[in-house]
Image (cartoon, rainbow, N blue to C red; front, side, top):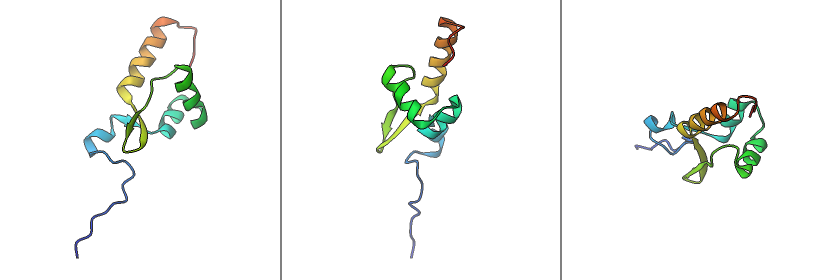
Length: 79
C-alpha cells in the first residue's frame, strides 16, 4: 500500500522553507537562547514571527531588514 510520509516538521513547500527560520535558528543567528528571542519580540527588538500551521516562523527578509535598520540607526547598538 502507498503511505505518505508525514514526518516533515515544517509544513511548507520546499521552496518556502529557505525563506523562514524557526525560533531555534533565530536564536543561533544572534547567539542567544530561544527564551531571549521571545523576550526580544515582546520588547519590539526583533520582528514578530508569522504563524504557519501553529509554528512561529520568522521571515528571513524581515530579520535582514530589521538588521539593516539597526545598523543604520545606531552603529553603537548591538543586538
